[in-house]
Length: 250
Image (cartoon, one colour):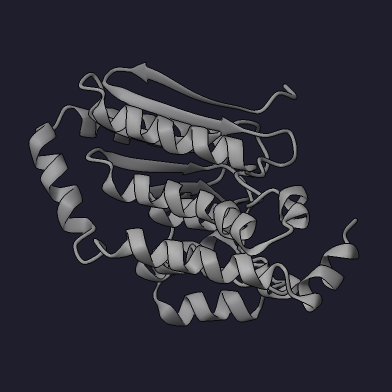
């Protein structure tokens, strides 16, 4: 299993969207584009009532943005375009008319934390610790900040951002509201995700749609906001400080 992919499988009115990349499920631009398109496709599919977002493999849920692409950014426009990848996925999740359940089986970093925060209900294993490492390389979690702050609050978001080299435990994430529940094993997680998704899929689809709208009330400006945040990150990645720091990871 070394080929990146994004797939959509439908079972019992549940659309299972799965992404994978052999480098710890990091997200290059092409995978982010496919993920955005697949979320929109599932949102428009009348045979799907509920969506589950998950990643392949049994270890890392998502290592965030592709480090190789970050290092390759050579001008501000490239930077803005690159960092808009996660912005576009988060906005697709936000505007999707279907509830999205997150299934987080392992560690998640940076943009991956943003994906978990942008789900409507997220379940995880005890191995699913989280980290926002962006400040440590000279940028910041600007694009995902609105989604993360909305879910766990500004204080917890600030703590994670400042303690940029610390992995916060899954229990900490549950306490702060990112995860609704944490399970001992992947098998228990999968059972809980399936049970919840299929239960919700039997509810009134119109009620679910209207409830989703209520959940995301007040975020209509995110189309503009997240693009502006992508521009900030795109400029910072070109700074001498960041370029020098990134070279250490070559």
